[in-house]
Image (cartoon, rainbow, N blue to C red; front, side, top):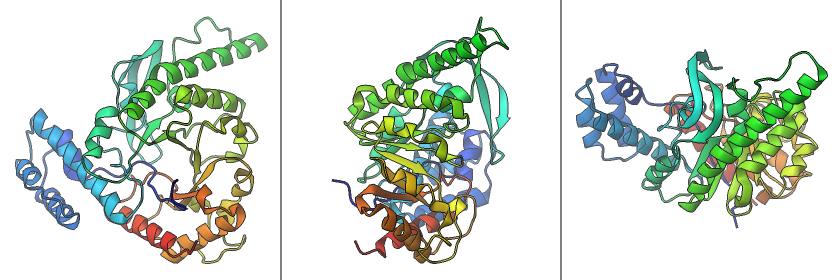
Length: 381
């Protein structure tokens, strides 16, 4: 039985400068090394090996780079652990980001060039040119590494099939599909459906399965593109269903969707009952920062009134990840109490930030998460 109002982080954290520079062959400076010292002390990590490596400042070997990434993973895991949250992760320290990294591990894609993400980061976008096939399990070693750092439950996020497809060019599935006719539109959707289901069955499911076989208990499927095309909600749902496959009921599956119109998911979302355990949306970004538990101030949580009618744990975003404002525990408390009054069952609410915290510094991210835990602890259940 999971604890009521369980707390977790959604995925990404910023990568420390010493990690980013070292991996990208940019010389470090004294401030970078001092930053590593400061966080090692704060997190009570013995990091002499890391500091000795960083003192080189440049020309790191492949083995040294691997150790730097592992220390970055250790630091991030311990940061989340120290904040007090129940389920931890390392904030994607082993990854480039959520699209380019998995695509690079899949046969059948070719990269064309860089595109810009919402926070002015850049990643390479690819096109599919043949049926996708998994080249290697791309989150297994990450899970094994993080498992050595903590006794707490770990949640591993994976980018879902719909988003990987939506963010890719299609040079294979739509071949021969005519343009500008009703038949063409129908066949184009069938081609899209095949692309999504091939990614679900050949790529996502095997990754989920191997993580489960190695002891993973919490897996999160990230689908930020899910509600960007209202006519494809059925394809998103089918892709999720095929991704989970016969793992249904064997572990806890969460789906994270952010910054979009969640109303488009209803009523089709009911098809995922019994397959997906938790749906996590962002709410705090739409909410006021005033204290109180009435609709006037808690205006960001309107969709809860629909979501409560379905058999899902409600992943509740109570931290705005796009501002340095440190939400006081009292504000976190009031946001949860408002939703609790609607849902009535604390076992159906998990508490988290709106999204990943990669756009915030570690200091800001830590303070936000710490206050989130304090806010939960103020509630008497």
